[in-house]
Image (cartoon, rainbow, N blue to C red; front, side, top):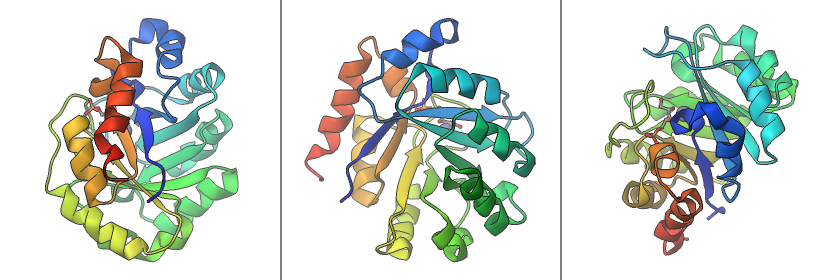
Length: 218
Ligand code: DX5
Ligand code: ZN
């Protein structure tokens, strides 16, 4: 099994001191940035300017989750801002194959996200174009929601579909030490966590607790 990646979501950080907040999670692997447009999802967050600030504040992998529609015309701006991974939602892409090629051509790793109700077959024919599949474990739009365990069946199906391709499976939403264990047992290897990390007083401890919770499975 690949090394598990821990990706704190800055959605739950204190934006009055974003640089210090990101420094506080430096023992993680990736920094997850949620971009919402008030159209595809019922919330609005941030754009390339903040991604650029995140990029200057850390050497961790910058993992940008785009919950925006349309998406294609913004990809270059997020890669130029410093995104290492750019993930688009399958539900927002009429020409998914082309969109994924645009991400890689811009120089980033390409991810594709599926809402809880979206079946795994939607990514079946683009697997050679992706580096990551994000199985949403909540309906996107807000932090602090409850993990949907039914998504684990989909994670298992995705893992079987992916076979030996070097593609990570990321989970996002409601990840805690106990749900992390369930998601990793199903086949996930990137854990996004907002509240469980930034909601903790000791963030380094929260990150090591997450790592400990899945250690027995590796
Ligand atoms: C939800 C976002 C998540 C969010 C997760 O739409 O994509 O990344 O920050 O927050 P928690 O871990 O609090 O569920
Ligand atoms: Zn996210």
